[in-house]
Length: 115
Image (cartoon, rainbow, N blue to C red; front, side, top):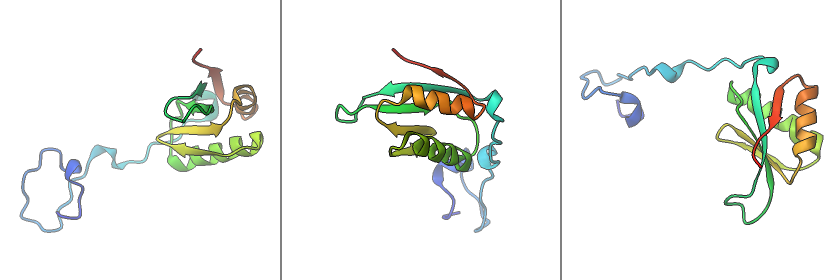
């Protein structure tokens, strides 16, 4: 039981089986929705970034690998750096219009969000 994460036990207090691992319902990988069913939001953000602007793409539903692949396509299309963290794609700089056109060209449902 020591190999399991403590938060994954969810109510199991003690087990005499040394190899017991509580199966949580989140073990199944979330299936990636097809692009026309995705509702992505493209927004500009400056919070906690030292005044630098970044373009955020949020709302992706699916596996982490598919999100990273989409992030790579967007970074290459804009010609800038970025990252994929916490279910968001971060693109350095203000590239909202270009990211929006790249997403729509790839078949995703996307819209601008924020002010």
